[in-house]
Structure formats: C-alpha cells, structure tokens
Image (spheres, rainbow, N blue to C red):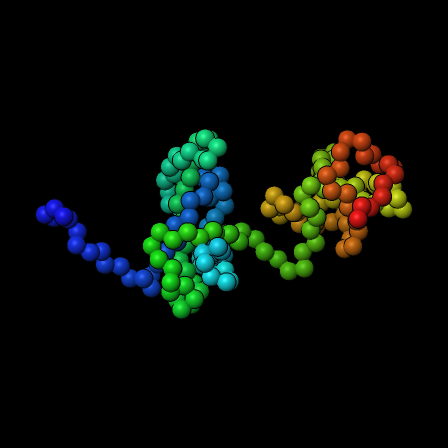
Length: 176
C-alpha cells in the first residue's frame, strides 16, 4: 500500500444501476423509460428495469470476430423490488432485453417465411397441397418474427425458408 491509496470504497448496494453496451445502430431506438428485462443474472426469474439514459458518446470495441463496432452505454435503473436482487453486486453479468414495442393478440409470422414481392412482402401458404403466394402487410419486426397487419388469418399454414424452386402452384406437403 502506498500513501494516498484508497482504503475503501463506499457504495450503496440498494442503488445499483446496470450499464449495458449496445450497438450504436440499436441504441438510437432505445429511449429513456424503455422497459428492460434483465436475464441470466443468477436468479430464477428476470428482473425488471427502465432505461434512465443512453450516453451521448459512442466508443469503439472489437467484437469476438475481430470486427470494430461502435457501442453506446445505456444506463438502466432496477425497478424490481430490492429483495429480489439484493445479492447482485458491482460488475456482475446480466443480459438485457429492451422492450421496444409490445402488443396484445398479435398475429405474427416467422421472418424466414417472408420474401419481397413487388413493392411489399409475401409468404407462401399451403392450400390443398400446393403453394400459393399471399401478399401480406407487416409492421413490427424483431429479426425472428414479424407482426402481420393483413393478408393472413390465424391458423393458416405458411412455408418457412422457401427456396427458388417454390412457385405459385408448386405441389407441397407438410413435414412431421
């Protein structure tokens, strides 16, 4: 120990904040007040939080694949009761899911079923053993699924991962 070295650090464990590194292209969609689910922190259920702020300055970080990425720190305040996260501490690992949009009774389709058709989107449905092109209108996308606004009804079968051999009228059958 040297003269002037800190002897201890005082902190209030009840006022933890979560710092989440987010790609700058994603950070622009995250606003103060955005709901956050904090998972894989060690507890049985996700913790909840709200975004306090996204820092105004990005920094460069090299990804595991060696790619330079621009990242931004997003600061999240825990909103779950403190007794649920009292064993969490400084520097602990959590995974954050930002809730950018949510709705009730949303009809959705796997993104892998969608393809460009004219100026919009379409899917192939399976009708009487043949593929049929069905134009659809989508809204919110998350990379895995898209919200359907129109074009399909609940329970209709769509073809996921259609390749170039599938055309309107191509005979198809369900697997499994």
